[in-house]
Length: 378
Image (cartoon, rainbow, N blue to C red; front, side, top):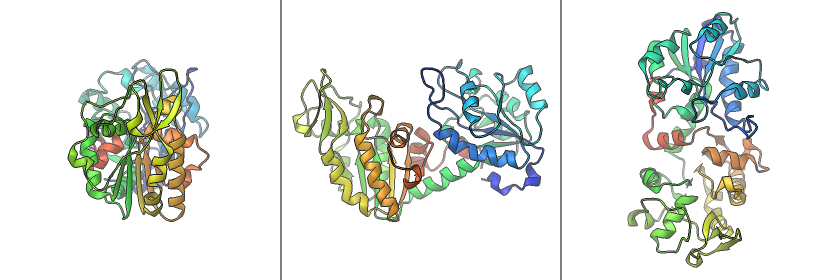
């Protein structure tokens, strides 16, 4: 797989570059971009190409609604540099904007998923996208697990390269697949049935694997503890997983009853009216020694319900990781809610190791070692 840093300025000057970025960012109620993490990470490739005289045509998707627009993203990108936006992909407006581009200029086209062929990985759409440019660059690691037209099909019609972010994501996650020891993995989220293969894989490569988030509820349930109104997966952890000496789970839980009263309880004291919303302080203290000794730390998934404001223990673990990184450990952290939660803490991001833009893509790459978007670049 070739990366754009292998191309000279002469290779790029005046060339039309179709850049698949992942600028799928959350919008506020007022329709503005609230979290610019992915924009910041993705801008490095935009800047690299533009500064070398390429005509940069950015394509991305946003949200789940095909009618959702990338216009707010274009406005947010102006913080980084001059970006033109056209609410079109294949029509006359987009064609005119592309034709008038000068060397170094940056153009953002409309939401790819406004065309239903995108999610169908339609070869015709891939061919039409390829007609925009002289080369294709995929920098959208967070979308690379999707076999979509702008990620897979288009690469077959143009010389293709990985962007700088794509390169960095793969480099760091390859380290996470073969970690230096002692190693510590933290996995949250929900749906144990989808996470079980990865948990098994992590248990074979990491010295400690700590399960948190809604997955911890499944552990409590499997151990025979009451879980009240808590979210439970269709599948529970097997005896093989629960009895693995490397497997760790919370030893206390933060619960919220129907009256919104919040308490920290031991798992065996959770009541019918309780909903588990986070781990507790004893759990953080329990894993602190192993985290402090780890040479490599992997983390995906906050400890609690981020959307409900339960972030204090996520922040506490982030602080432990920051200390470990300061002492020489490597860390790879990913997952949208995880990153959003820790960026709300007072810990500088650069002290936390590598922050991945991937959520599902990160987890799939850790398990399989490749993704459809990466295969398309090889």
